Length: 541
Image (cartoon, rainbow, N blue to C red; front, side, top):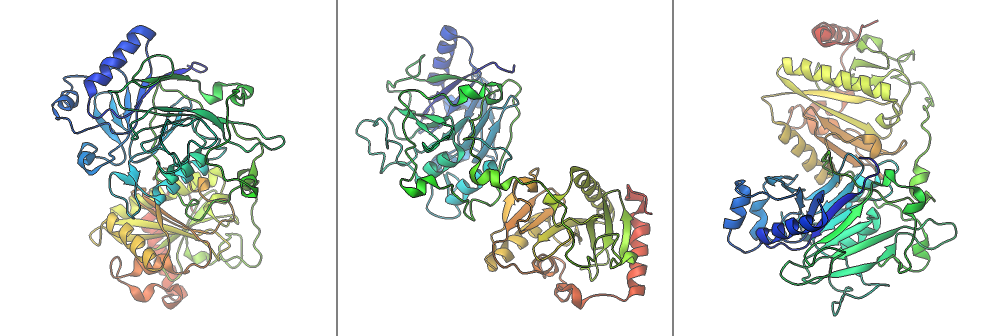
């Protein structure tokens, strides 16, 4: 379906009036043809009796087209949304989740943020915080070649949306709405932004996403703030109750079409004035952290992205060719180096090798290391990463056969050769959730911001080569990440695992205090090598 526009309907506060909504959708489709999906912002559920919803929940009735909704905006409706990551609420009705990206196979990208703004941390289930906004921003800004999203869905309006543009009646847009939503819209550069909750309809004039400077490429955003169904509110071209539009996948569009400007385009209402507006914004520490994102593959859903400004700015400067770092002195981990303690090596692959840790937390504490000189995971080739994944899979099976689960961590700070520390933990010692909680709690005690990132995310999308970071991965695929800005405790990973809550070997937190003799180390390595052999995919040279 490449090159074919996607036909989309958008709706404001439904307030539990499902029959009214879907009857209107059917009437629109009967008159104007089929639409591909319906997006609902604001309050999907209301104070009305649940009998009407029960008919849809039990499949007695069915939404006529795929319908995607945001989450709760108040405590009374939280119970309708059982999974914060998103789920199917009824046939053809899907809750997107608290925050994330809805991604279609043809290129459609919809960013969404459920709830109202919260001033406290952690935010309640019906709200979002500045941390949630930062994580959502980074989930996209860290994506290679990010140019913007097709659509942004929020329930609150962005603060100041009326600046430089047409006014929404008597409403003061400088006081209503959320500053966090304004910041989110500025960063994500949506082509369309839908919001609700203010009980009025307002279709803002399109605005530029860039400052008008010499040679800049212009972009624009359309904003529609929807009102509930009972009132008459203006629409694009079909119905008083629904906003209808067509959107073509960006990758199917001619770049020249993407930058065309209408005559009524305005300046960005959220843009700061003066010299500050002309300077590329550096990501703050919080914005640089990883994010929680969710992906939905839709075989019939398509969309388009926003064009880039052609200038690159801060993001283009980050895209530098990878280079293999040469050791500044003797390296204890380059396999060809005479300094390597080869009696600790237990497996050698094509690109990586496995060795027992010197002064390990346990006799089966191992390291996955690249054969050549690489400083961190983000600098590895795809072939080396594939082999690391093979080692992780083999170690997971091996340790499970021993009644253990592994914890992996990397500290890319004050080290010149990549070391993936793999430490087994007995299954009956503590659960994976307990291990994750221990890392987070001890990080908080030391004022380290350790954030959970998506299981299938790529560290290379979060950290650029040369960026100091600390990274934890559990054998369930759960991941924690901290971007090191100043100092970082070198033994942090070992200290957490050696603590009473996990391995209960606090005396082994410092590797220099628990090294064995060469004979003992050779015997331990030989025993591990023999045990691991049935799981080893490589041929030890």
